[in-house]
Length: 542
Image 1: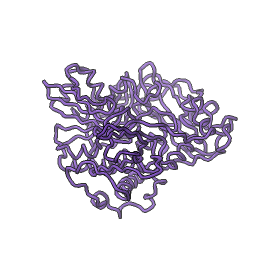
Image 2 (image 1 turned 135 degrees about the vertical axis):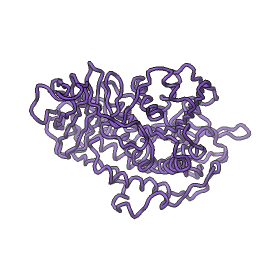
Image 3 (image 1 turned 180 degrees about the vertical axis):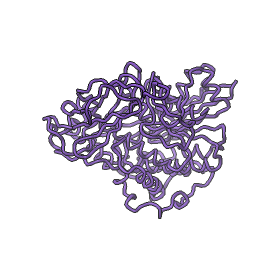
């Protein structure tokens, strides 16, 4: 989005930060180690990044997750940005029609509930250009000018009618709440650890990402995955030993907001459409050329390592068209099967990635699921197509994971799974995570991604022909526990974590924020189909 500064510099700095958090965080109490690693994991940061090449000022987390100052009167709700009084207008004079391939610009003026212009930025607006009759849509760029105004820019990528729509996702004051909680609280949720002794005695305790968040008044149990370095903590059961932990489940959402915070995050001022005085515009094909109804220049095949521009694509006739590679359509079962023939696909992440597995299972009748007698929400799940030799795996990333009761033995770290893969031209890895990390400070996700990056790099070093795809987190949640603002930060971490590696990205954020449909953390089938087709375009680029 246009609300980020100095992206390239921040990206390099964040890579170092990820590694620094992972390598420097230690815990001084006894640790239960989970399974020996299949291969050693280097602890030398110099093997991954040249420290001397990173500016010293970028080691600070605050600079890496920069957001314009939110300012304002934090105690007066009526002084916060209002979706009802904020307005936008064309930057230049209106035209009778516009040319395909050009840009449309508008100026947005943020105002408070009294109608007074704001003097600072920091709001989270979402801008779209929609073509309802053509089932078309593209995300607009929102540039925060940090003075209460925003520059909106929309590429005109299809011929026909188009309409600007802008929504206030969070006021700057609400963003200030999210920032305070995200950076200042250890955790906004907790979990339950289920212990069972050999004599049948059972105990349930609180578990979390750090010992303080377990609420333990005495000692705690520490569980370390020696492959990934990930550590999990549970309060010490009253009678059972730490190694009696057998189950994991969701716990409670913790109270972290004040009544004023709740007003700023309330539904009547969150994700609300701004009033518009802009009529629809008519976009005409260029007077020269092939009179195409879309502005799609010649693009290379979809290969890993491409840097995607903004926007990374747009919808037209319900199909997502990539702007940086020649994404393909897979309209039939045979076209999907031909692409996946001989492939073993390993999907690891959250339930939004499980939707890909479910879409393929439901779309391809001969792709048969195998009952592994696992908790469905956690996995592992597997589907097999025997005539074409296709195998699809999905499993959830390890804790922190909000789920119903599931065996701890089923919680495998992503890094551990990656180190166990041989890789090769028929191996496809898809990683998708973020939604379960918005309830923790940024260091938790940074540390997790550092371990995963090291495992991805090792996989690509030993088998460069392995395809690795990163699914970015999508829109959906609008609360202090999971918000689009927090998701944007997760995606910045995801992009930066894999910089310099030959991986592909599927920008689920843009694909779920380009149409006039309600946000849902689990998007509708139309969107999932387009995500999967872009994914398949990387497997079968031609």
